[in-house]
Image (cartoon, rainbow, N blue to C red):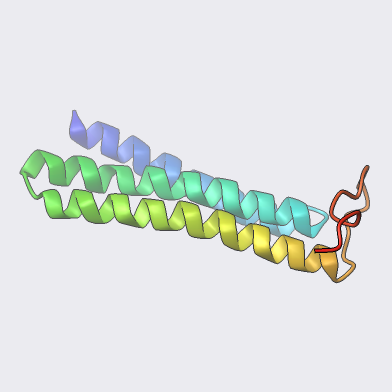
Length: 110
């Protein structure tokens, strides 16, 4: 049963990463591209690391489970923070999306 779950999880994670690459290549503005790369890659990483954790938990090697969890947390936090910082820096430099409704960042001086 673990083998089937692991295979499905790996395929789903790979598909999400491939969709993320297509989103980065095809979406029109940088905010949408950052959104595609951050959300889908973090979910893809979850589904790619899930079989590692399941298999190592089944075999009793809990060191790999801890490593998978640490990698997952670092990827989630680093991806979100890095994407936010890059998008904010580009926004401050004047690269604003065409479909912007309200400029909340422009109202502040920090």
